[in-house]
Image 1 (tube, rainbow, N blue to C red):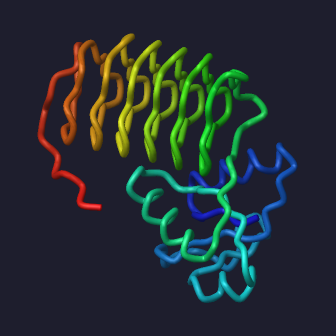
Image 2 (tube, rainbow, N blue to C red):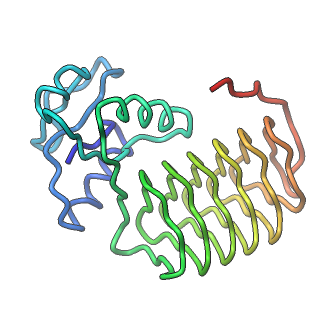
Image 3 (cartoon, rainbow, N blue to C red):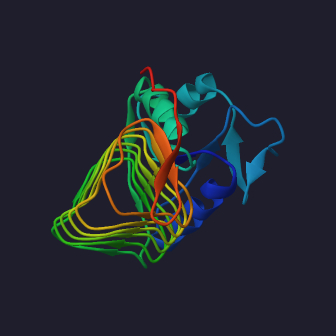
Length: 211
């Protein structure tokens, strides 16, 4: 198994994998220039050609980096290598049996995923974050530590919910939205903006994504 990433979040993903008896044989990072040759005694690969040589036909991988856009880009680059994406789910996380989880997820220590929750591809649900009943989380969404998504919410693709932010029940967050740390979102938020404050208000517009 290969972890895509070799920096801070990858270290935490590695620990979760060890605790879950997932064997990690390599890290991958072709961006950072200051990496050593290995991390925790596990080799770091720094280009795609080496990945193909080592894994031959199929790469089993876990996303191990933060940022919705970075996760999306590396996910799609690795798909070209016939990659099978696995989920990294902490043993300390509470995940409802009725939750619908797609591939490429990180659900970190002490996270909570409630009943009938749906989580899309490539999402990162960080430590102590909570997603409550009947909420829908799109693809490549990041929910930072201790953020609370209350019941019947919808968070669309590529949005980022900051640490300790709270999304009140039945609120919809558009795509490519940044919710600042500590914000309390009381009403729907359109796509392509950043919101902050209590209650949260739009602080600036964000350039739409062109994928």
